[in-house]
Amino acid sequence: MNAHAPPPPAPPIGLLVELTHRCPLGCPHCSNPLALERPAAELDAETWKRVFSEAAALGALHVHLSGGEPTARRDIAELTRHAAQAGLYTNLITSGVGVSEKLWGDLIEAGLDHAQLSFQGADKATNDRLGHYDGAWEKKRAFAAMVTRAGLPLTINAVISRANLHQVGAFIDLSIELGARRLEVAHTQYYGWALVNRAALIPPKAETMAAIALVEAARPKLEGKLVIDMVVPDYYARYPKPCAGGWGRVAINVSPSGKALPCHAAESIPGLEFWNVRDRSLGEIWRDSPAFRAFRGTEWMQEPCRSCERREIDWGGCRCQALALIGDAAATDPACHKSPHHARIAAMAAAEAEADESAIRWRSYKEKVEA
Ligand code: SF4
Ligand code: SF4
Image (cartoon, rainbow, N blue to C red; front, side, top):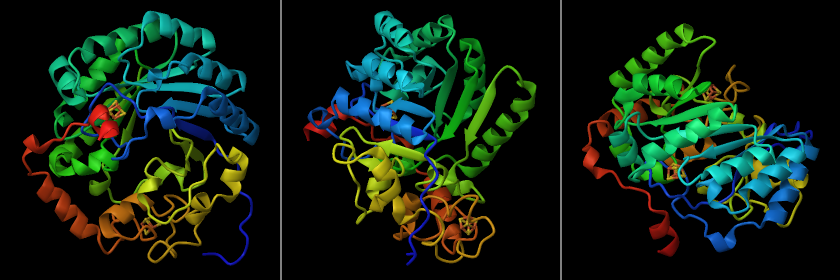
């Protein structure tokens, strides 16, 4: 660690709030932690509102209202209103299941700016099977129609695994049909529950590359109609992603019980001290929290990151992945081809891609919180 006091960080750009871990779906690719937080531990509305005001005062531009399923909170419209009034751009990240016409009307009236709707498959059978929810397909389509009728921008979020990789083209067609402005083709990130299912979900490299090529070929043809973002699967990448835009650089995650996290999966790293928004202001946490300072900047880096010309581009990749795959959170993300562990990880991914898909384990919110 740096012996000198680092300069104060630039303000965060965004806040991602996991309002609850409750969710009606049971996706095997869910990246929420194995130990979900219980409803009784969730922050109350007044604390969330204070957090939104503090985020806006700090300079954040947007808030992502996420979960779990954020609309499982009865006060979701009240929270959205406060965030909008604080001057934050509000984005609802939802499964679309359980959003009634009445609730949707309340959200619009509260000032919601954008909706991001997940699909688990591009047809009913795949969608309902992977979401582990019969009838989700119809509810999601109805939700998409409510969004576009209201004139709000809609993003479709398609989480890709071996089970639906063949549907990337169909996801593009579905997004156009539903009137979405943006499609996120997000290859599964293997954290939390998804890591348990990795061998059942990871797709073969050749098919993955073909799907990436399909998206790249589609992009110019859809210019002005549909923007396609793509999260490339880490294990087949040459360089890692700048996880969370760089640790403690642009974003703050807050868990349902108020733990402020530099990234969604940061709690998987033992020994980090997470401050809670119940006890401290967001500004104090952003500047001084030990967890945010642990991997901020480049001083913590080992070789080959330390002397690499990309160290301020990808910030060494993902700390949680370095820990999960090679047991050292300060190591170069093994998704990087410069990591001495990269070849072993790629070989492991190729072997797992041949595993039997029947090994899928569905997420169960009920089972996990009551266990
Ligand atoms: S179960 Fe599915 S919809 Fe629910 S939080 Fe996890 S990934 Fe999202
Ligand atoms: S060595 Fe580190 S900084 Fe360089 S490309 Fe790989 S992960 Fe990024």
